[in-house]
Length: 160
Ligand code: HEC
Ligand code: HEC
Image 1 (cartoon, protein in one colour):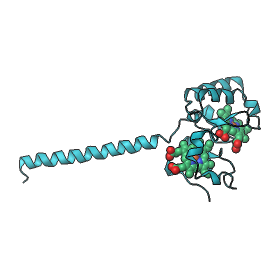
Image 2 (cartoon, rainbow, N blue to C red; image 1 turned 180 degrees about the vertical axis):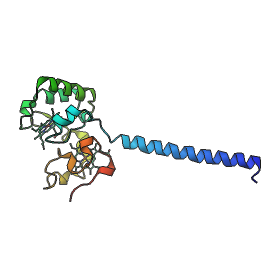
Image 3 (cartoon, rainbow, N blue to C red; image 1 turned 135 degrees about the horizontal axis):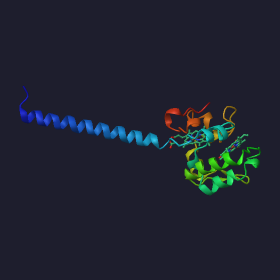
């Protein structure tokens, strides 16, 4: 038999260890959560996820998204025009979730020329022009969860 005061000490230790473990789990989840972005509107994924992955709205500013959405017929060298109702709904979706300032391109804003993106991809950059990747904008070549907005390390696999 364990004496009562020993039992209390034992309980306290078990509780402390359990709580620390739970706190660590919560921290881990919160950290993983930082690498997930909301791309989950069916219309956004259908219309803007067919030629490339549906890019995380949080990686351009609101003004930059308005610029992209205002020039869909002249979209980085292609025509991505859609009807006005779909365009307006998607504009609302991305602007509400806008965040970081991206960079410039030729005439249109780009996630891939933004300061944060360039810094984050210093090591991956030499692969952007490889046969398997082709372009920095081809996020899904390395981030296997990109079509779901998941950029966590678990889904990262840079092709050789
Ligand atoms: C017809 C094909 C097509 C459709 C549809 C399309 N895009 Fe694109 N998009 C492109 C191409 C091509 C590029 C240039 C990719 C590159 O440089 O490798 C591009 C690039 C982009 C970029 C810049 C990526 C970078 O380099 O940072 C953004 C942002 C973007 N598209 C948003 C959208 C949004 C929002 C929609 C939906 C309204 C959309 N696209 C629909 C073809 C398309
Ligand atoms: C050639 C492969 C490759 C391509 C293409 C690529 N990335 Fe990455 N990405 C990486 C690597 C490698 C890292 C660094 C991971 C690390 O060091 O934690 C990274 C980091 C990131 C991170 C940060 C994750 C973190 O740990 O904080 C985000 C977000 C991200 N990339 C988004 C994108 C987006 C959006 C695109 C497309 C516009 C893209 N990446 C294209 C390889 C790539």
